[in-house]
Length: 382
Image 1 (tube, rainbow, N blue to C red):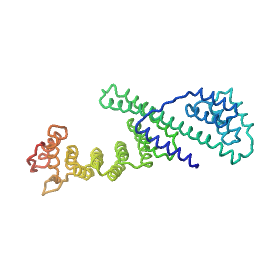
Image 2 (image 1 turned 180 degrees about the horizontal axis):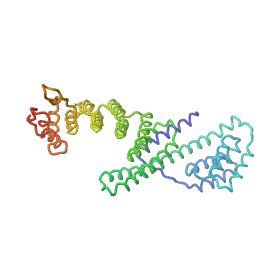
Image 3 (image 1 turned 90 degrees about the horizontal axis):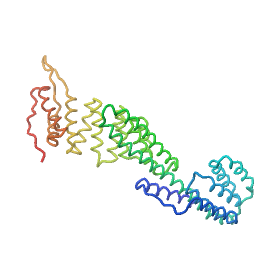
Image 4 (image 1 turned 90 degrees about the vertical axis):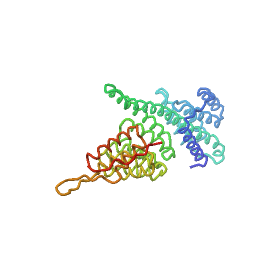
């Protein structure tokens, strides 16, 4: 690839990264029509480089119209650059009304088969470089447009999903339908943005993550899983693995979810407690109490101030209790740490939901395992 073209692509990638972070806008100082008028005048006067540069600027402003591509084709034909001329003619033909297509096809008959001299190539390079720059800017404008629209729709989808969680039963079906429609629209815009970027663009992972979220909110588990995996393949991230684990858990893919949470913890040790807590919640909700104990222990070790983790650890230890036969009787063996976990939850959240549930759990233990000591003094949270 030519060095200048590579530089343009690198700048485009940087601009795209800025767009995804800030959503900033660009201004336009000239109109498409004025550029076309000037380019026609330059072409008629034989100022081919100027004509090509003007056409390139017009293309950057509006890639959906055919006139600028036609002028660019005319300039490159007169410069004996037949390959580029054919490309411009094809793009013009794809956009032109039917009444213009035959005339456009005849343009190429004017194209000479002669070879452009090295001197002519050097003279033409500035215009070619400007044309390439304009095309890359045009692609960026297209990415910006689709991303902004997709992001606005995704925000509406988030709000609708929040409404669904607290909606009355008779409102839920309508909200679900709305979320599905918003998911289709948002993912479609982000995929359109993807098409305007290079396959290896370093920002592809951000677009995949947006697509995954739009599917996730709509409960489209398999599609969300695939999209998060694509984001991870482009750029591994603890957050992506955590979100992937959440969707896998909801889809009943418990072992896959556990693996994703573990990977999330490995990539971001500072926030590993959340990943292990999610892993424990996944196992707890799946009824796998014994398997939930270990990740919840890790979660409480890393974040001892989480009442939720302590309560779930206590509840999981209760679910993991063993029954032994003593003489003719069966006795329940309370797992070590059960009482302490419940007490810690009460200490951290005495009036909240986790503390209250832990208190009920403590009160139930003597009924399950007579003789268990639950009267250890609970330190009140200061």
